[in-house]
Image (cartoon, rainbow, N blue to C red; front, side):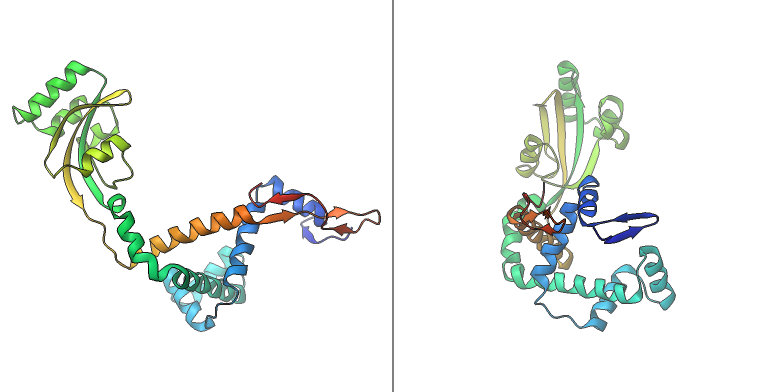
Length: 257
């Protein structure tokens, strides 16, 4: 069978190339990119504008910087332009498909996108947890000092302070506590898994629907769409005939197999 790819001294025919793609777990990536190419094919992008945006995003403002990028990526300037056009098409596809819905999607997701700073002390010793809580709540002891001294997690290194983090990051029990509390509110020791946790809400940082958030949510919707497309896309490997010519009557496999 004819060689379709030569790498050094190794020549690969079609079936061998497919086998290597599967061996190195590259088949899902190939299928993914082909699914994207099919989706964005009808979209038009002006090459020069796409290239300018592509380079500006990566800080490639001079010809020397652009050539260095091409060398690093093992691409020609022409291939760089094609990559820029593809990126432009993908952004347009996301905007055209989900742009009108994205603000309402943000409002649906906002409770989990808001960020919070909080202080945390955790211990497995119930009597110690109660003592620490009373020292903070009744005696006005510094949370940070007690966290540095007694907390058994990584937060001890920061005086118990964690964040800012989005509200979907902490343990679900802790996240619910933080969602319904006000800055400055101290929670009594609460059992979360193996730990007794004392926490104080420090600051709420509401999520903003700015351009960066808009693009993040467009990417999120796109990724959900893409995963569904991959599940629905079959990959059919060629099966050699008696004459040695491959056909597409072989095993049908899903894109993520």
